[in-house]
Length: 457
Image (cartoon, rainbow, N blue to C red; front, side):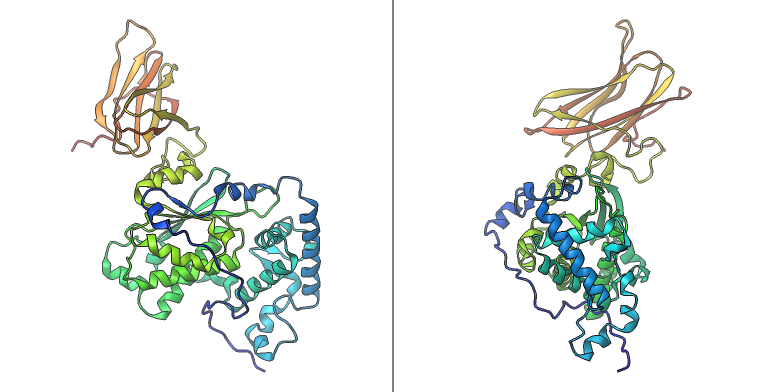
């Protein structure tokens, strides 16, 4: 029978699906209005990806050896992707071109045949075993379904596909989390014109498929940043920003979200460490519960839904301040000639309704000291001054009392030993977190001013 070209429609596999029933919390809507929603106990999955460096349990070793053997037998017998006993229709879908050289078959750039000697093979196989509680038969079935899905929909070539520039700009990678995992951002509401928004999301089935393929391409790009080696981080953090995203009237968004939830669960086991959805609008508080019906309990614990007021607090639990963009409340600028993410950042706790002082040593004379600092949530008054070590010298006021509106950067030429004192008055009844860093370098004295002040015309 001649080969046929099958359109990559990204439909869900027709094979028997796994049990997807979960328990939905009846109080989810009330929880949504107060705190970030964490589905399941965090302690169960926070260190889930950190056990590769530890001694593997005997039962896990035996499961891995069994899994290797099944895969090798399937590859050598040429039935890893499809069953020879099935009808010819399936063979047409998976053409000879796609199935030749199965010994060289890879997944996310990692060979599946363990005899190839690639360090990442066991890492990839373990991700399937963990997702199926080390049940080898189920993990083998899941791996075959992933390979069938990727072959049928030509996912291995999706990185070469081009989408409209507006869609491309909705995804980017920036920084790493506290364990070194890459962070990928999807900004779904990044539209200034409503007509452009309607054009991108569209109402036709083809628009939906294009956006689903674009989101899969985003995942594949993020996975290319991973290092599938023992002891390395082989999962990523996905941050989805819903600010200004289309509302309940845009059923296309709901359809795409449901489709992606299922695709990620079925075809990317263990590769998403946390899926943090931020700036969640009110209408999403009920919508998310219905979406999560399509995923399993293990995957459900990966999701965190955060309302706008809690975005910075939540992101800082997983992302260090020096790796979090200024736009989201961190201290990382896109272009920064002074600091790098490797520069040490210190943290200070500000007690409620109390005046606190952050002191930065400035003891190197004829140097210029530069500092960054911020308070999560702002709502404080502050002033900055240089306090000389000599009691007979005068303090130098660098910034008079002012309300904090965001990240502050300032600098000062040191002519005598002393310290930079940042006095902060917490105006709220809650504790606040302050982050700061500093750096000194040789320079010629010149007048400086805080970058938070307006530039005179």
